[in-house]
Structure formats: structure tokens, C-alpha cells
Amino acid sequence: MSEDVIYLDYNASTPCDPRVVQAMLPYLTDVFANPSSRSHGPGREAFSALEGARETTRRLLGARSVTEIVFTSGATEGNNLALIGTARALENRGRHIITQATEHPSVLQPLMSLQRDGWEITTLGVDGDGCIQLEKLASAIRDDTVLVSLMLANNETGTLQPVREAAAMIHERGALLHCDAAQGIGKVDVNVADLGVDMLTVSGHKFYAPNGVGAVYLRRSKPPLRRPPLIHGGGHEGNLRSGTPNVAGAVALARALEIAAEERETESERVSALRDELEASIVSALEGCTVNGSPANRLPGTTNLSFSGIEGNALLASLQNLALSSGSACTSGHSDASPVLLAMGVAKNLARASLRLSLGRFTTASEIDRAGRRIIDEVQRLRGITRRP
Ligand SMILES: *Cc1c(COP(=O)(O)O)cnc(C)c1O
Image 1: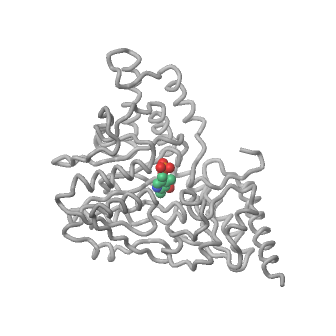
Image 2: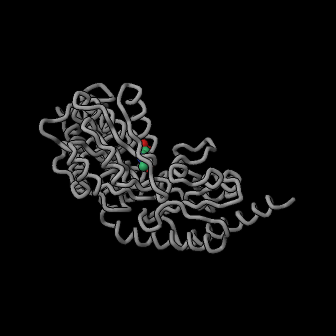
Image 3: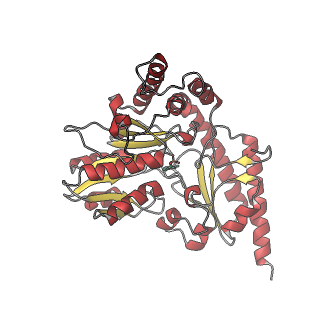
């Protein structure tokens, strides 16, 4: 990355922490054997590294058994496996699933595919802060509801959903709860037992491990759920996702989880102070700048701002040395207003003139200072241009 670029897109992807790189390096070179080749020493060594990473992941996510942890290629795969696998395992019990409007496409799209196959999907609306209302969830649960999917934190606004409170209500009615926690790790406490979730998805590249590795927690039940795999083959990962395991990736994920657990509290405080400073400087300098999302109930490093009277794309294009997103990076490429902001009731023109700034482990006070000034200058300049007759 060029020296003068300020990276404020940590919710889209994070760099690998050097400590994570150190931990995974031996598994790219020395300990490279296939962990399924347990007839020889090198294979057994790889197997033991993989299972060590699984145990660390189990412990840090608060799962009871290592058999509940499945390594995946990331949160997209984890969400697909949890949702489609569980729906199919429970198809004779009921075919109604509940989710909410601001979920990531990797939750909404698998649910749409289930809908095409005959499942009924209820999508709850959100309030102006992007939060679901528990009473609405309660009245949406039916006797044939088998599954509810609620994200822990939204990737665009940082808004936190009341997952713990929802869990009790969902279980009382005999349904299961899946949680996409891709934005949670290292920012808020993520513990499957405390949250009371049945399934939970994480993604390595959202917390300083490399791209292409993730994990999904699938709570063991009695009798066990028979989830059909999405990727068929040699039966790896409890026959839930075949393919030679990514040992280096799993080791990296486990190391990144350890660092996140150790540093979360101090880091959240630091990042949250920087975010507040950035937000306050912009909002106080500019008229017609609004914060989208719940100010009190959101991730520490995320702010989502709308600027009246300008074109979001023009603003983004003029901020060349700032790496940030308008709306969600996962759906960017087209300039439609963010569905997340629209679901929150943000007017279309404001939703199209919004920026997501997401800070992280390597963000400095000086970067925040420079980024804030650049944004203020550009918004003022663009407004000057549009106002000219
Ligand atoms: C990034 C993200 C995903 C997708 O994760 P990948 O590992 O890139 O597939 C899913 N959900 C949320 C909330 C995310 O932020």
C-alpha cells in the first residue's frame, strides 16, 4: 500500500498481523504435509497443528467440544453451510426461517435460494438505528419456524443486534439461532455460550488473519443434526466441507483469535476514541452531516456518515488517498443506495451520499486527523461546485 494512503476500510478486510504471519509460516514450508496422511510423521504433525488450532478456536469462542468447530474458507461459506445445511437437516420439522433486513448478502442470498426451493423467509425490518425490535421477532416466530439468523454487528453501520436477548425467545419456541459474527471478533465479546447461539460464523480476514480462512461453530445437539455438506468429497471437517484442510490458515485463525482476546478491551477503547474524534470533527465542521446507526450501541471502530447535497460517488472519487467505502464493499461496484441504510429509513439521496469509515489495529491519531480534514475539505469543495449557478 502506498505510503500516503490512509486505510479506513478495516470492516472490508484487515492486514495480517505480523504475529499471525509468524505463527503460520512454518505451516507453509516445513509442516506442509496433508493432515489426513496420518500414516507418516509429517502428516501427523500437520494433523496435530490443525487440531491444536481447533482446540484454541473452541476455547476462545466458548464452545464445549472441538467437534463443534468447522474450518471454512470464510464467513460466506460458514453462513451458507449453517443456513442451508440446517434448513435441509430440519426440513421435515418446518420450513419457516426468520432473518432481518440489514444482514450481509452471504446470509440473505442463501436464504433467497432456500426460498426458491420452497422455504418461507420472513425478513424483519429495523428501526432508525438499524436494530430489530424483539417484540416483532416474538410475533414472527411460528410453530414451523426452525431457524433464525441475526448478525452480531452490521458491517456498514456497526449497529449491534440484541442477539443474546433474542436467543432465549427463539429457544423457548423450539427454533435455532444462527449468528453472523464476522464483524464481532476483537471488537466486542464473542462467546457462543454467553450469546446462547446455536451457530456462529467468523472470518479470518476481518480480524488480522489472512483471507480465505474462517470457522463456523455448530452446536452439538441430541440427536445430532444431519446437515448435508455443500462441498462433497473425502469427508473432511466432519463431512461438512470436504477438501484438504488449510492448516496454515487454521493456525493463523487461532493465533489471530488469541491476540484479539488479549487485546480486545484496550484496543476497543483506543479505536473507539479515535472514531469519536473523527466523527465529531467532521460533524461539527459540516452542516447537513448525519451519523447513520446507533451512536450508543455499535462497534468501536465504525462510523457511517451521510452528507446532504453531494453525490456519494463524486465524494469517494475525490478522496483518492483515503481507502474507504460507500455502503458495503461486498456489494460495491454498482452505485445503488445501500440497502442497509434504506432499510433504516435513510432517504435515498442521503443513502447515496454516505461513507463508511472503519478503523482498526493500525490506525493512528495522525491518520485520523488528516483523514478528517480531507473529508471536510472535499465535502465543502463539492458543495461549492454544486451550488454554483
Ligand atoms: C465480511 C463479512 C462476511 C463475509 O466474509 P468472507 O470471509 O469475506 O466471506 C459476512 N458477514 C459479514 C457481516 C461480513 O462483514
